[in-house]
Every structure is written in structure tokens, then in C-alpha cells.
Image 1 (cartoon, rainbow, N blue to C red):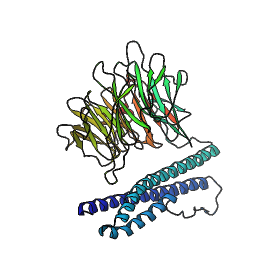
Image 2 (cartoon, rainbow, N blue to C red):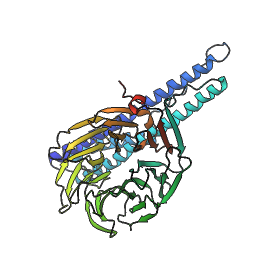
Image 3 (cartoon, helix red, strand yellow):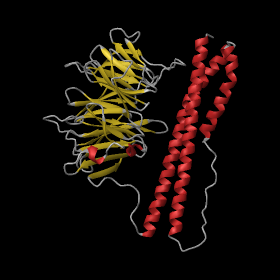
Image 4 (tube, rainbow, N blue to C red):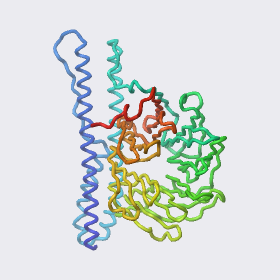
Length: 472
């Protein structure tokens, strides 16, 4: 095996080991926080009892890490044993090593999921204990509440909300709040679209449109009379914003569709869609026919197809895609054998791309950075903003953009790309969608893990930066 391939393998193992250590550290920190909160709750309860000797019941010492974490450590240990045979050009060991790297990647994700599930479970238990103490003592809860200058409504949906957007304001169709859902059951993926026509009173005018599969993302066609959704069943769905009738394409992919982007060219009927198996698809929604399909993204250390999280049509011939391989690629649809350019400034998967004119791209990534990139000189971003969470989506709003930052909540960026408002606490249960209504006075966001849609309205003449200022 060539020396550079050996170095690439070692670098991949080092990166995976670092991620494993970070997952373990996060779990240890969470358990320490849980222990501290339990002790505080017990101390508070003891203060309300008649005087007696202290009797704190300390929780038993927990074994650090769940089954997946212990499996991860074992796999890393086994990989270490293969390093010497790899240096000796052992082909069998090399192939086993490649498979182990793929397995490690999945285990790290599982470990992160275990940590998050444990954190949510402990938070729920502690919240219930504190609420019981409040009730027993007849006093107000000390848990944080919404700012007094907001009126907020919280709704629990029947399926997990995966995305939301406010529809554009037009002379003949009023703006609506639209929420998509994605539910993974034991044997199927299902979803729907919730349309809230009067978002000042969401409980009255909510309409649910079932879809064949879950909806990761959707967008509005340039004429603003329809939206188009990417379904997990490999179909595209067109929904009229006038009567909410739905038209579905044939299956255009035997894998999940993750994103869809219409052409900005007037009168064009072409859209671009991406899949979770590395491919891009050009599709004509007028003829309901696939125009072009090509393999776009794969993992560098295994060459296996990977998720193409986002795609964007700059025009009918220039398109962009971003994937789990941490690369943003620019393509000429007249020749897709190789990308026109590859932008490698990201430290994690690329999750969002939007063309904002003058050869500039607005991007988001799992590395928690919002970037503005000039396609003509991409090595140094024009702007870069730390958002506190993976940047899943950016939505244009009055005076800037609002970013949906997963576990980092939401953040509002002005037109000069300066953060002006932020609520990181909104992402405690995984925020994938947030938006501001056209009037700028209504905000909505949805959180995936607790099935929740939150809609807030500004009172009086306040602004969002006044209510949610950027932390000093």
C-alpha cells in the first residue's frame, strides 16, 4: 500500500478516536450535571422538612457509557491491532480495516444518540421532581418561562416535525405557516404537511395533508402558487397553495430524497433533488420525467456513497451540492463526469446551500459555521459566523436571515452577517426548522424529539433583538 494511503488511514482512525473521546467526555459531563441537579433537589426538599439530621441519598455510581460506547471502544482497540499488518501490505487486513471504519462512523453516531437520549430522559425526570416540589409547597415554579413581552402557543403534533417555512405573501394567496413531519416506525417512514392559515390562532385553522412518506425539506416554486417536497419514498410531491391538492411524481429514486431546489430561470420547469445515497437528479415537473441523474458524493476513506444533504440550482446549467463528505461541489449539468469545482473549507458535512447572487453562496454545515463563499475565490469565505449548533437551514427574513441550528436553537443574522438575536435554549430537543412571518412579528420553530411546534408573537412595538439579545 502506498505511503499516502497509509497516512490517510491513520488520520481517519485518529479522527474517529477523537470523536469517541468527545462523546465519552460529553456523557461524563452530563452525568455530573445530573448528579448536581439531583443533590440540589434533595437539598431543597430537606429545607422544607422539620429539623433533623441530614440524610442525603447519593445515587449509585453509574458505569460510564452505554452499550454502544463500550462497543465503540472495543472496535477501536481491534482496529489498533490491524495497523501493523496494513504496513506490511496485507490486503485482507486492509479490507477489514475499511469495513471497520464504516462501522466506527455508525457507532459514533449511535453513541451521540445515546448521550442525547439520556440527557433528555434525565431532564424530564428532574423537571417532574421540581414541579412536584413546587406543587407540594404551594409556590410558583422556578423553571424559566417565556419573556413577558411575547405571547407564545405550544402545540404537540402527531408526528415528529422535521421542517417549517412561512409561505410567501402574494396578492391572491395569504401567507401560511407550513410544517412538514417525518416519522420513522419499525417498518415504514411516514409524514405529512400541516398548513396553518391563520398563524395568529394556530389551533383554529390547521389543515393536515398526508404524504406518502416523510418530508425532510420542501420549497416554493418561483410562481409562489405551489410548493414542492422531497419525500423519503423517492418521490416528489407538488402541493397547490390555493386548494392544497397534491400531485406526486413517479418514484425517481429507490432511496430517500433529502432536498429539492427549483430553477430560478423564468418559465423553467426543472428542479434538482438529492438523495441519501450520493446522487443528484434533474427532474422536469411539467413532463414528470427524469432529465439527468449522476453520482455526486462519496466518503473519501471508503468511496461509499453518502448523504447529499443539500442542493441548489444557480441556473439551468450551474448547480451546487453539499454532502456528508464535507465537500461543496459545483456542477455544469452539460457535463457531470466531474464537478466544475470542489470547495473544501468545511470541517463537517455540508447541510445548506443557497445562491444569493453575484456568484455568492450562503452555506451551513454540521461544523456550526454559517459561511458566505464566492465561487470565484472559494478558499477564504467572505463572511463566517459561529452559530452554536449545526446549521441545518437558513431562511430569508426582513433585514437578514434566521438560521435553524439544531441543538443550538435559532439565531437571526442581519444583512451584513452580524448576529443580532439568538435563543440557544430553543434547540434542547433538536430544532430543524424556524422562520419569521412576512410581517416580522410572528416567529415559529419546531423541535423534532418532543413533537413540538412553538409559535410566538411580539407584543407592542418590540423587536426580536430586544427580547432575545446576543449573549455578551
